[in-house]
Image 1 (cartoon, rainbow, N blue to C red):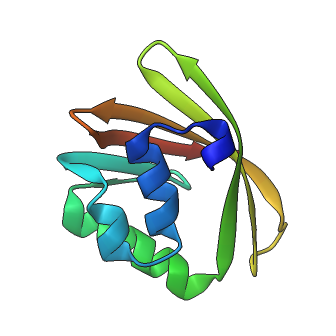
Image 2 (image 1 turned 180 degrees about the vertical axis):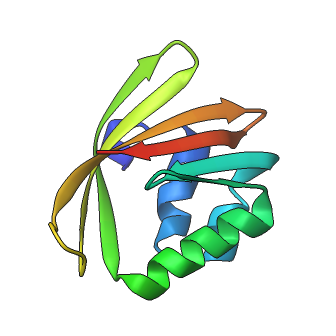
Amino acid sequence: MKALNLPDPIAAYFDADQRDGHAVARCFTRDGRVTDEGETHVGPAAIEAWKTAASARFSYTTEPLSLEKADRRYVVTSRVTGTFPGSPVDLRFTFLLERGRIASLVITP
């Protein structure tokens, strides 16, 4: 992650993603949102529940491969490898940052 020079909130997200839902939720603003697999999760409790459920279903690791900046958004392409069908897969993590935290994250293929 250091080689990509990820902004601090994004680097913190990928670090927290290796731990637990509470750590991930702390990376977001109070009204932060995550959209993943067609569902949107808003606020710390919902984000923590989303991460906890994902970790319970599958074991996985995420390796950021590239970083692009488009307007106010950062797009990180990451290789996700784990115990899910179709592994490994490259996913796009589109972040919107606000006041040193993540305001929005959209995860797409």
